[in-house]
Image 1 (cartoon, rainbow, N blue to C red):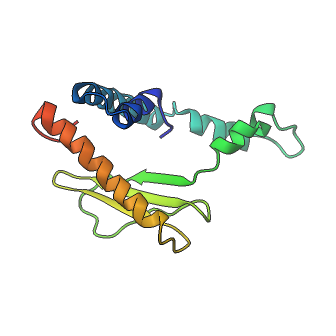
Image 2 (image 1 turned 90 degrees about the horizontal axis):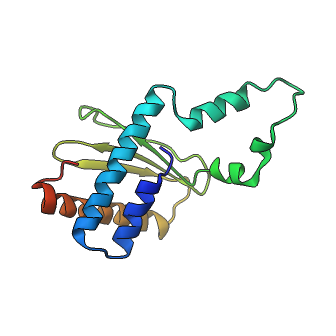
Length: 156
């Protein structure tokens, strides 16, 4: 899903080392926003799909609207990190591919007893790939600690 201000605030709270209660409250707000955005998208209310539909509805020879030629639109349409959540605990093998030659694809599944992340990239990258894996692990562990402090478990 697209980034949100709530997600940004959570990351900033973690990076700034704010007190754990503030970090946890920011995490809860980010999760609520993410869940709502996911629901909106599944009900055809996601902005990404609407923009794709508008772009695909252009007829041959029709002028391209300014929105699609704006540099910020181009930047927001190039994903170095592309992710997908898998909702089933029963699949044994799966993955999700990168969309740019220098990018990463991350398929992930959040299950009852474990979180699984499958990272792909086209080029062997002895620095960025292991670091990305380590940072994902650290981030998940940080969020788990917060949830254990305030919820008695890791359920958000």
